[in-house]
Image 1 (tube, protein in one colour):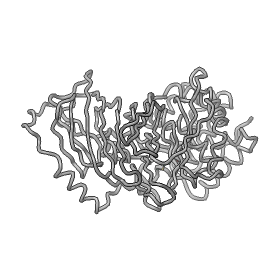
Image 2 (tube, rainbow, N blue to C red; image 1 turned 180 degrees about the vertical axis):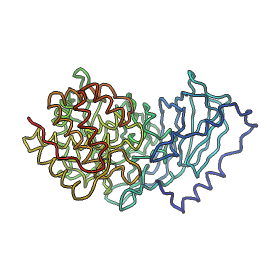
Image 3 (cartoon, helix red, strand yellow; image 1 turned 120 degrees about the vertical axis):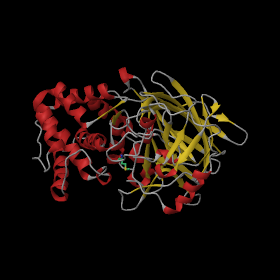
Image 4 (cartoon, rainbow, N blue to C red; image 1 turned 30 degrees about the vertical axis):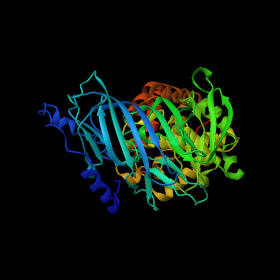
Length: 483
Ligand code: MET
């Protein structure tokens, strides 16, 4: 799982000592208090989230006074509901020092559990099912460090800082999958609790902020500019994009691929000085939107584009605004991240063990795009098959963190869809994909849910083809669809 840098224990200790002790004795524990400490018990990241907590909306205000440094200050108001009585609210947070917590506008007792990366807030009375509350958290300082162990070069998740001088004037951005969002935002940091976001980012003059959602008017302050974004459809916490840079924002004509042909706003953000060879990877986004929506159904959000970043990191499908490193700026990765808007951002995995539902579908989009260009899709499938035959494979539901983004999640996941397509034919496969996105957009599902849904949509033969690829310990035969 995530590794905490020992040096950052200093931050942890600081956080532990920071908040004041609760001003008054805690209320007598109601019978529900034991349940209040329960996490979502994710099979891969068991400490994430809180059972029974439903965050509906995050109203986020971030101030980045010195872009390129890690420091930020934040104020977030979460709209909370509960599916069981909660005597405490336990948010994932490993961020800057908390300076204030309010429950429905009134100061509320809180404490940090840095070892568990939790901010624990005690409301005046338990939050009950059917109620809604507003929880405000203010914080300031440097985010915590959560390393992702899946990569040979350890990847620091969450809030990124690109110092001035490294080919730019200083930049910050989020790269959070799977569990980095709580380095800069107190969240129920799990894809089973999706939420909408309003994101306000205040930056110095000359800098531009970008974030997931539709952009509103820029508010000019005294020596600051505040950019406001509305993400109106629920997304998983890891999919929230926030970027600060000296950006050039490039608008393109809207593309009518939303629900009932609604126009999708097109904008890309390129750091000033981005090479044409990088920008050219995004020249065909309009065509990609048309091809993929033809297969998958209406594009699920109001906008799409990319924000290019300079560090050599993995690309990430941040909602409405994929985060694209310069080195991944090619059409294959561009179409992969675009496909994730449907699979990952709109239709999300219920647990991290189900993340192949994101990666398999997004990888399959690469084959569909190849075919749309007149290329040989079966050759793409055969290459994936050879990779798995050589490198080994596993059943698709992950059992450990190191499997989340491995070849089985990507290539075997994609071949599972190729097998479904081979079993039912192109027309039924396309109808299945449309029905799947219509049914699960805005929601989260397990692999078992997919198989059940496949059975109802395409019948036993289709489900069996998919199930073989999901469950078989070895490598099933290469599927060959008839066209
Ligand atoms: N979901 C990313 C992709 O596009 C990978 C993230 S790595 C933490 O493949």
